[in-house]
Image 1 (cartoon, rainbow, N blue to C red):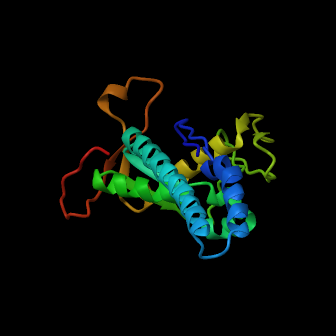
Image 2 (image 1 turned 120 degrees about the vertical axis):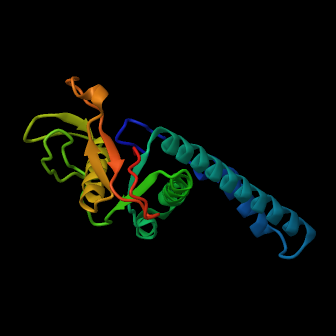
Length: 211
């Protein structure tokens, strides 16, 4: 997972780490007489290993979503069709926790009064230059690319994250949810940090709070 602010969370691939032991137990189970004591014990060991993998994934997802929520007031995610991706490469996607991180980030953001937004599933994000917006067609093996318009050499994932952030920003501004503001402390600075304020609140309040 790569964020537009530079945050990177590498996939620990817990299933891949345990696959050798899991395959060994599955072969052992196949040699046992179904329903016997040894079969039951091996089955329990398999279930225990699956439980460990599940807990590891959940812990990783909680820690990652917590970092995302702590470091941002506005969270923009890409709506990924995880089920369709599993058909393409089931084991790789199954060993990822993309959907879980998204769900937990949304839950944590809403719990803390922060703004969560997902861009449309069919919005293009891959291959868009983060400097000039030029679009490129990339293969799955193209992890970095050079923009044909401005010559900027960039990471595919970071450029996509910045494109998602930009699309989400335009979405929530167009919807009248937030407005772009320039804090007084930044008005004389040449480099400005993006800042927003809520334009309307779900609670019917007219009060504007900094987002």
